Each structure stands twice: as structure tokens, then as C-alpha cells.
Length: 143
Image 1 (spheres, rainbow, N blue to C red):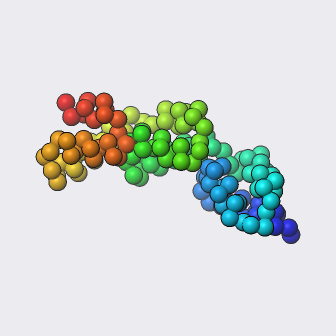
Image 2: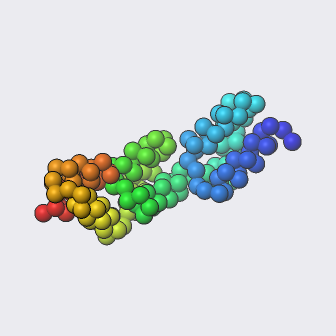
Image 3: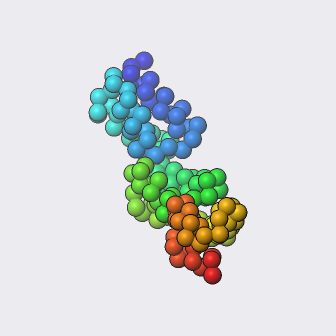
């Protein structure tokens, strides 16, 4: 079995366990020194053709998990997707899948947590902005 075939199998397993971005897979492949650049791109193309990789699917799953698990706001999620080098149209499509009621419940939950520690509105607003929430959403919620 060649190095390319071994790497392809390894990446198929890696992508089957959890959705990955194309960028993340490229980074993993770059660490395998036995491969040429052409072999790396060939592996990525094979993974895309076989549906092991799909940046739109990755972006939607990323948005869902960051909303549900980390309670991040839109800005922080968008920054994370940019770090994975996801295309803007995929980011927009994924952001549109956010359930506004869950989003606002998360904002309220984080507000209540921070309110237990401080009454200073500026600190609370800064905290919510650091979590990625838009200033207009924060002010709507506070008023």
C-alpha cells in the first residue's frame, strides 16, 4: 500500500468520526512529509468527491454545536468559520440556520450568569460582546 493510499484511508476515518473542514484536512495532510503537494490535493479531491468532506455541512454543524454547547454569538461563530477558511456563501447559509429563540435564550442565560457577579452594565455588555453577540441584540435584550 502506498503512502497516498494510507493517507487517504487515514483521512477517510478522520472525516467519518467528525465533520472536518477542507482546511483542517489540508493541515493534517501537510504534516505527512512523505506526500507531494499533488498527492495531498488529490486526496482532498477524492474526499470531496466521496462526500467525506463538505464545507457547507461542516459550517452548519459548527454553527449548531457552538450555539448549543458554547453559547457563542454570531460574530464569534463567523470568526471561527473564517479561521477554517470557509467560503462566505457557506458562512451566510450556516448562520441563517440559527434558531432565534435558542439564540436569545443563550443570551439571556449568559446575562443572568454575569449579572450574578456584577451589576455594572458596561462589564455585562463587554462580556456578551466577547461571547460574540451583536451590540443591537444586547441592547434590545437589556431594554
